[in-house]
Image 1 (cartoon, one colour):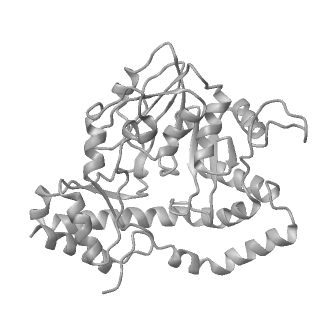
Image 2 (cartoon, one colour; image 1 turned 60 degrees about the horizontal axis):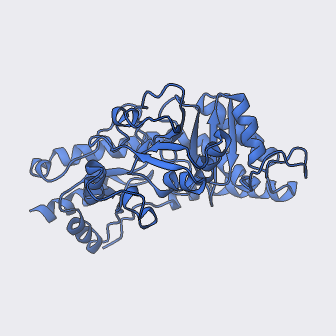
Image 3 (cartoon, one colour; image 1 turned 180 degrees about the vertical axis):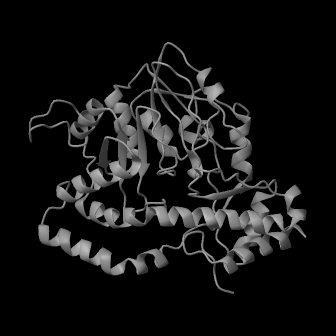
Length: 358
């Protein structure tokens, strides 16, 4: 039986093959491989797409988060409010700067940070907040007047207008706008912040070899920018396809009412860009094994909450602190969802799930 992968980029790349090869040749001929015109053009085109004044392209989504906190001056003694249910980069950037992560639990229905619980975490030491727009669904931001909010939109490009001081994107290949390697960007309407970010991404130097701040090497390659410029033109179409796939899953599951007591499906709101289609099941692990046996790819995003990670040992957290996040870690399962996934493949996924619960 043929495999149904969790993600298959081959159809996307085959359709764009000649365009991508021409972009590669253009960068090769220009002989400018770090920053430069390709990166500047990509920043401008992405800013127009997002409806913001400034985009600063960087080396990864993880580095985008780190740079925002660096620009904000976050360090030892500062607290940063965030979610315990996310990819580690959201937590890692806080720890790398010596600051203290302060977790608030998530909403069970959205997997996103509960804004009221987050607002209640504010203290005199709160320097920033990092809410995450998880799986493509925009989060409701907490009301934290006077606190810098940096939106982790790594999985949710274009899902909602910027509300915080800046937003952070990832161009990891599995993202809706994915590169052919690592890459990221920060988008903002704050001109001063954008200037600081550009300084920090190149070791704090301006002009060359004159260093005003201690930054780092957080620059985006010209080749990645050239390839992402091509893909950006197709992003609206791909997003529409992802939403269509999500709605088709809903239709297929609705035709099997016996599954409604076994599974919880994600709500697909108007602005949901569906980076992942994530269901919940109390029998998640056994269901995943069953799907794997039938050559159907799945993934668990994420198996262990941030406050329970080994590197957080000794920081005063314990199992039970954030029950909704912990329950999500035990129940979530991502199903195949990517542009090019066929209706027949989706039918097989749902039929195989129904067989498990029969």
